[in-house]
Image (cartoon, rainbow over all chains, first blue to last red; front, side, top):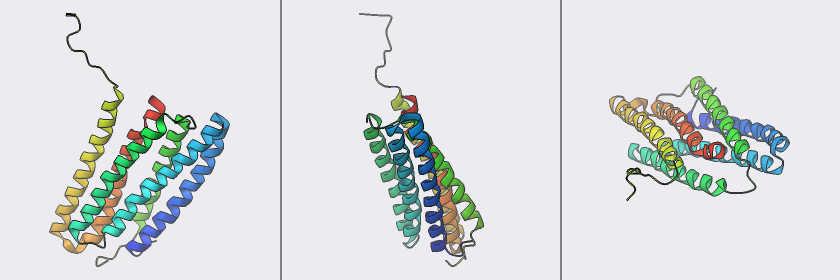
Length: 133
Length: 76
Protein backbone atom coordinates (compact mmCIF):
# COMPACT_ATOMS: atom_id res chain seq x y z
CA UNK A 1 0.00 0.00 0.00
CA UNK A 2 1.48 3.31 -1.11
CA UNK A 3 1.78 6.01 1.57
CA UNK A 4 3.03 8.82 -0.64
CA UNK A 5 2.65 9.98 -4.23
CA UNK A 6 6.24 8.99 -5.07
CA UNK A 7 5.66 5.50 -3.65
CA UNK A 8 2.38 5.20 -5.57
CA UNK A 9 3.95 6.02 -8.91
CA UNK A 10 6.91 3.75 -8.17
CA UNK A 11 4.48 0.87 -7.54
CA UNK A 12 2.49 1.77 -10.67
CA UNK A 13 5.64 1.69 -12.77
CA UNK A 14 7.04 -1.56 -11.31
CA UNK A 15 3.79 -3.54 -11.37
CA UNK A 16 2.73 -2.10 -14.72
CA UNK A 17 6.09 -3.06 -16.25
CA UNK A 18 5.84 -6.59 -14.86
CA UNK A 19 2.34 -7.02 -16.25
CA UNK A 20 3.25 -5.64 -19.66
CA UNK A 21 6.35 -7.89 -19.72
CA UNK A 22 4.14 -10.90 -18.98
CA UNK A 23 1.70 -9.88 -21.70
CA UNK A 24 4.62 -9.37 -24.11
CA UNK A 25 5.86 -12.91 -23.44
CA UNK A 26 2.43 -14.51 -23.77
CA UNK A 27 1.60 -12.32 -26.80
CA UNK A 28 4.89 -13.20 -28.47
CA UNK A 29 4.28 -16.93 -28.09
CA UNK A 30 0.67 -16.71 -29.27
CA UNK A 31 1.61 -14.25 -32.03
CA UNK A 32 4.41 -16.51 -33.24
CA UNK A 33 2.05 -19.50 -33.35
CA UNK A 34 -0.66 -17.51 -35.13
CA UNK A 35 1.31 -15.32 -37.53
CA UNK A 36 4.94 -16.40 -37.40
CA UNK A 37 7.75 -13.87 -37.01
CA UNK A 38 5.55 -10.78 -37.73
CA UNK A 39 3.26 -11.92 -34.91
CA UNK A 40 6.16 -12.09 -32.46
CA UNK A 41 7.46 -8.65 -33.48
CA UNK A 42 3.95 -7.15 -33.33
CA UNK A 43 3.35 -8.44 -29.81
CA UNK A 44 6.61 -6.90 -28.62
CA UNK A 45 5.88 -3.58 -30.34
CA UNK A 46 2.31 -3.50 -28.97
CA UNK A 47 3.44 -4.16 -25.40
CA UNK A 48 6.33 -1.70 -25.71
CA UNK A 49 4.09 1.07 -27.08
CA UNK A 50 1.61 0.59 -24.24
CA UNK A 51 4.32 0.68 -21.59
CA UNK A 52 5.77 3.84 -23.13
CA UNK A 53 2.51 5.74 -23.45
CA UNK A 54 0.95 4.64 -20.15
CA UNK A 55 4.17 5.41 -18.27
CA UNK A 56 4.41 8.86 -19.86
CA UNK A 57 1.00 9.79 -18.41
CA UNK A 58 2.05 8.68 -14.92
CA UNK A 59 5.39 10.47 -15.20
CA UNK A 60 3.73 13.69 -16.40
CA UNK A 61 1.36 13.67 -13.38
CA UNK A 62 4.24 12.90 -10.99
CA UNK A 63 6.60 15.54 -12.42
CA UNK A 64 3.78 18.07 -12.88
CA UNK A 65 2.72 17.53 -9.26
CA UNK A 66 5.94 19.21 -8.12
CA UNK A 67 5.11 22.36 -10.13
CA UNK A 68 2.63 25.14 -9.39
CA UNK A 69 -0.95 24.41 -10.45
CA UNK A 70 -0.65 26.06 -13.89
CA UNK A 71 2.54 24.15 -14.57
CA UNK A 72 0.88 20.91 -13.50
CA UNK A 73 -1.96 21.21 -15.98
CA UNK A 74 0.43 22.46 -18.66
CA UNK A 75 2.67 19.43 -18.29
CA UNK A 76 -0.17 16.89 -18.03
CA UNK A 77 -2.34 18.25 -20.86
CA UNK A 78 0.57 19.32 -23.09
CA UNK A 79 2.11 15.89 -22.58
CA UNK A 80 -1.24 14.29 -23.43
CA UNK A 81 -1.57 16.13 -26.74
CA UNK A 82 2.04 15.43 -27.75
CA UNK A 83 1.63 11.79 -26.79
CA UNK A 84 -1.50 11.32 -28.89
CA UNK A 85 0.06 13.04 -31.89
CA UNK A 86 3.14 10.82 -31.48
CA UNK A 87 0.89 7.76 -31.22
CA UNK A 88 -0.98 8.67 -34.43
CA UNK A 89 2.33 9.16 -36.26
CA UNK A 90 3.66 5.81 -34.99
CA UNK A 91 0.47 3.97 -35.92
CA UNK A 92 0.55 5.58 -39.37
CA UNK A 93 4.17 4.52 -39.83
CA UNK A 94 3.59 0.96 -38.63
CA UNK A 95 0.33 0.40 -40.49
CA UNK A 96 1.86 -0.33 -43.87
CA UNK A 97 4.92 -2.18 -42.56
CA UNK A 98 5.26 -5.77 -43.74
CA UNK A 99 6.89 -6.99 -40.51
CA UNK A 100 3.66 -6.29 -38.59
CA UNK A 101 0.71 -8.56 -37.91
CA UNK A 102 -2.16 -6.09 -37.34
CA UNK A 103 -4.50 -8.21 -35.19
CA UNK A 104 -1.67 -9.44 -32.93
CA UNK A 105 -0.44 -5.87 -32.38
CA UNK A 106 -3.97 -4.59 -31.72
CA UNK A 107 -4.93 -7.28 -29.22
CA UNK A 108 -1.60 -7.07 -27.38
CA UNK A 109 -2.11 -3.31 -27.14
CA UNK A 110 -5.66 -3.68 -25.83
CA UNK A 111 -4.69 -6.40 -23.32
CA UNK A 112 -1.78 -4.32 -22.03
CA UNK A 113 -3.87 -1.15 -21.74
CA UNK A 114 -6.70 -2.87 -19.89
CA UNK A 115 -4.26 -4.72 -17.64
CA UNK A 116 -2.36 -1.57 -16.67
CA UNK A 117 -5.66 0.24 -16.08
CA UNK A 118 -6.71 -2.48 -13.66
CA UNK A 119 -3.39 -2.25 -11.82
CA UNK A 120 -3.55 1.56 -11.70
CA UNK A 121 -7.09 1.45 -10.30
CA UNK A 122 -6.25 -1.06 -7.58
CA UNK A 123 -3.12 0.85 -6.53
CA UNK A 124 -4.88 4.23 -6.42
CA UNK A 125 -7.82 2.81 -4.47
CA UNK A 126 -5.50 1.19 -1.94
CA UNK A 127 -3.16 4.18 -1.64
CA UNK A 128 -3.31 6.38 1.43
CA UNK A 129 -2.12 9.76 0.19
CA UNK A 130 -1.56 12.27 3.01
CA UNK A 131 -3.42 15.56 2.54
CA UNK A 132 -0.26 17.68 2.81
CA UNK A 133 1.70 15.56 0.30
CA UNK B 1 -23.33 16.85 -66.04
CA UNK B 2 -24.20 13.71 -64.07
CA UNK B 3 -27.27 14.73 -62.05
CA UNK B 4 -27.58 11.38 -60.24
CA UNK B 5 -24.41 12.11 -58.32
CA UNK B 6 -25.03 15.44 -56.59
CA UNK B 7 -23.27 14.82 -53.25
CA UNK B 8 -20.20 12.79 -53.99
CA UNK B 9 -17.68 12.44 -51.21
CA UNK B 10 -14.36 10.88 -51.92
CA UNK B 11 -11.66 9.80 -49.49
CA UNK B 12 -11.18 7.29 -46.75
CA UNK B 13 -14.00 6.80 -44.23
CA UNK B 14 -11.38 5.76 -41.66
CA UNK B 15 -10.43 9.42 -41.28
CA UNK B 16 -13.80 10.00 -39.59
CA UNK B 17 -12.88 7.19 -37.21
CA UNK B 18 -9.63 8.95 -36.32
CA UNK B 19 -11.61 12.09 -35.63
CA UNK B 20 -14.10 10.32 -33.39
CA UNK B 21 -11.29 8.55 -31.54
CA UNK B 22 -9.84 11.96 -30.73
CA UNK B 23 -13.07 13.87 -30.00
CA UNK B 24 -14.52 11.50 -27.38
CA UNK B 25 -11.45 11.22 -25.16
CA UNK B 26 -10.76 14.93 -25.74
CA UNK B 27 -14.12 15.83 -24.22
CA UNK B 28 -13.57 13.25 -21.45
CA UNK B 29 -10.16 14.59 -20.45
CA UNK B 30 -11.51 18.15 -20.64
CA UNK B 31 -14.29 17.29 -18.19
CA UNK B 32 -11.93 15.47 -15.83
CA UNK B 33 -9.47 18.37 -15.78
CA UNK B 34 -12.12 21.09 -15.46
CA UNK B 35 -13.71 19.34 -12.49
CA UNK B 36 -10.29 18.86 -10.89
CA UNK B 37 -9.51 22.57 -11.26
CA UNK B 38 -12.89 23.39 -9.75
CA UNK B 39 -12.29 21.01 -6.85
CA UNK B 40 -8.79 22.34 -6.17
CA UNK B 41 -10.17 25.88 -6.22
CA UNK B 42 -12.70 24.86 -3.58
CA UNK B 43 -10.31 22.83 -1.44
CA UNK B 44 -6.66 23.60 -2.26
CA UNK B 45 -5.45 21.39 0.62
CA UNK B 46 -6.71 18.32 -1.26
CA UNK B 47 -4.72 19.13 -4.42
CA UNK B 48 -2.34 16.14 -4.13
CA UNK B 49 -5.17 13.66 -3.67
CA UNK B 50 -7.23 15.21 -6.46
CA UNK B 51 -4.30 15.17 -8.89
CA UNK B 52 -3.82 11.42 -8.37
CA UNK B 53 -7.54 10.79 -8.81
CA UNK B 54 -7.46 12.94 -11.95
CA UNK B 55 -4.61 10.83 -13.30
CA UNK B 56 -6.82 7.74 -12.97
CA UNK B 57 -9.62 9.53 -14.86
CA UNK B 58 -7.21 10.58 -17.60
CA UNK B 59 -5.79 7.03 -17.80
CA UNK B 60 -9.26 5.62 -18.46
CA UNK B 61 -10.21 8.15 -21.15
CA UNK B 62 -6.76 7.83 -22.69
CA UNK B 63 -7.23 4.07 -22.95
CA UNK B 64 -10.22 4.68 -25.21
CA UNK B 65 -8.18 7.06 -27.36
CA UNK B 66 -5.30 4.60 -27.76
CA UNK B 67 -7.61 1.69 -28.57
CA UNK B 68 -9.61 3.84 -31.01
CA UNK B 69 -6.49 5.03 -32.81
CA UNK B 70 -5.10 1.49 -33.07
CA UNK B 71 -8.22 0.09 -34.76
CA UNK B 72 -6.76 0.48 -38.31
CA UNK B 73 -4.74 -2.64 -37.48
CA UNK B 74 -7.84 -4.82 -37.42
CA UNK B 75 -10.44 -2.89 -39.45
CA UNK B 76 -8.27 -1.71 -42.34
